[in-house]
Image (tube, rainbow, N blue to C red):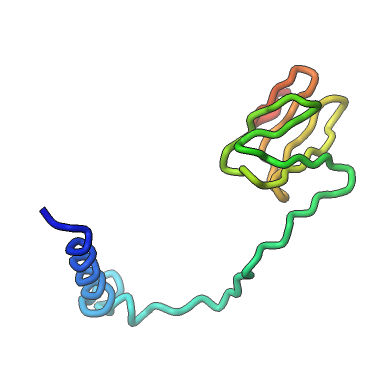
Length: 119
């Protein structure tokens, strides 16, 4: 039985051999470290706040749910803390967006969130 520290040492040795010493057939007998290039893409330290068009209704997702007229509706836990936008489609029917991506529909007449619009 080995400790976490021993496991980490073993993994570090394997990783060094895999990336810096051992040639790979799929890489033309070169090591990954010989071919690796740093990305030139610049990533911001902070992602700008998502802005929605003025005609959208905006709601914040709290623990996977949003509130609409004092009722709580589940959308997804993966957007907890994020703002989502509701674009009116027709009376009582809304298309739900996260940024520019449609993530579902909300029919307030029947109080239901769906991933796709059933026509």
